[in-house]
Image (cartoon, rainbow, N blue to C red; front, side, top):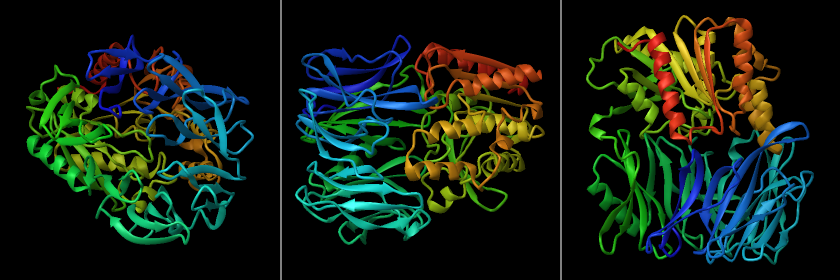
Length: 595
């Protein structure tokens, strides 16, 4: 919603391509914003009432390596013109916005002028596109943070074995180094800094006291953690919302079975409770608002309801549906999903979602194991999933394990996934099958795997590693060559992030990633596989599937392959999505029939 509450901005699909559209709430009008045909829309936000910011991404070959590049565009609604902010040939990350002026006149953007320099923080005039450097590059500093007044107050630097912080209280002071800490020092971790204007006091998320990320007060001058503001007994705090001056916490966000926002602000808490009473057993999320907090966009939905967006005006008790997602679906005809858990072979409790087909006795049913993508900093949620509902409609039980390494369950649970690609993370999937079989719900001889991205990898690796367990596997945009994907992602990261990612995936030094790559182990495959990939994918490159397809052909292995021109790391064209579900249905019925 725009600051004055007169317009809304949303994603839409036009001719099979994702676009950004602005709809008028006062006047019945719509405006489709321009974007290059080869670009991916990463995010968008308002910059005042008359301008919007759009982050666009492309895959480019730089110094012989394929890399993902982002750039920031400002679109002026009155003139219908766009400007690129930043250097076309600068660093990979060109959309690191630190602060946006509420009136939409200027912003702070951190970016490399060239790929050989550390980031500079620029102040951009959004009307003219002119810029001024407000913080020049500091050696080894890759991340900058601004306070609620738009003053750059802190920077994080990354060395080979440690990180450090630069800090200042105001724009008139020089930055000073506040010591450093080893990457292995878990007690020194910082996440999501919140800086109050004109004060050394602020907030941060830390996991050092409880093993789960909680929100604490923090003094940046002394680096002392203060009192806890909010902690959840079983889940990490993911985010928090501060007041305009940065001095009060309005809300915290966390995920248990679903995304939740706990409002600490009394007025917002009352609004949340009012709507939850009107929509019992449904998820209710405030997704946007105007500056006056008089009008809100609210989403209401659930596992068997794709949901609707509403305009909500508390002062008049107005609740008007703005848009319904997949409005032709009847929630009464969709399957229910249960949040549950089971024990892995080493005793670790694995949270999971279990969806049962409607109208079938829960005995000896066929099973689809559906691991999520990521694999790290991601997890499945209790929400509407069209693929889950499609499979349940066809008669399958669907198991979605939040295997070790999934986010939201604390530091130890996440750490248990480090170095476990194709190893213990895969064991967790196998153990989920055994758990359901031991309860008599599924027939252990009627099991297939299906997933996307890392989930596609886990499906392909599952039938390669354990053909005695699985009859088939289907993969959309799956990783087949782990070493190649590691290199692709690593090239986009800097400093500590690159080393951490490599360590997280590889595990022990010298471990041979080829030993857990479906591409390199194709001779071991004995089960049929179905592959699909969009040729415009910038997250997992198309060649991850085409190289595997070529290897399958050469080795004479049973497989089907379909490429989708113009699709990225997911479906934008609904005809393509329908085609994929039809192919998936036929493949599963041929290799693991539901009846």
